[in-house]
Amino acid sequence: MVAVPRHSRNGSLLRQKIVHEAGILETCLHFLWETTPTCVLDFEEGTTLNTGDPEIAPFLALPALPHILQALRACLGPEENAESLSQPEHYKPISDSNRARITADR
Image: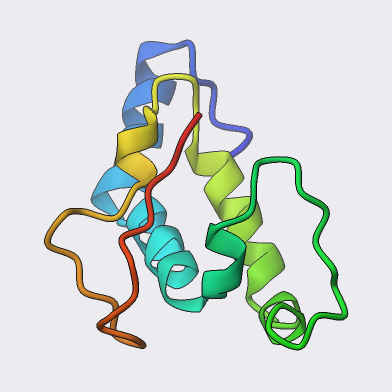
């Protein structure tokens, strides 16, 4: 996806099919919404993570995490707004129904 040219019409159309119609962006976001530790959600941007923290370490050790982050990075472009990365209002996490809604800021 990284190699797909964003500035040509055909490249843009192909990228749209891969990212949105194939659901790659949505799949990556669902993974992060379900697995990110709740303690991380309250951190200020730029906060250094304690990778030895017992709440954070299992999340960072997930084998899929590096691949999800790479795919997410390839999906995002300057045209994506923060709201498109936030959980929908009606979204209920599978893992914890009392978990607060995750919103993205850019």
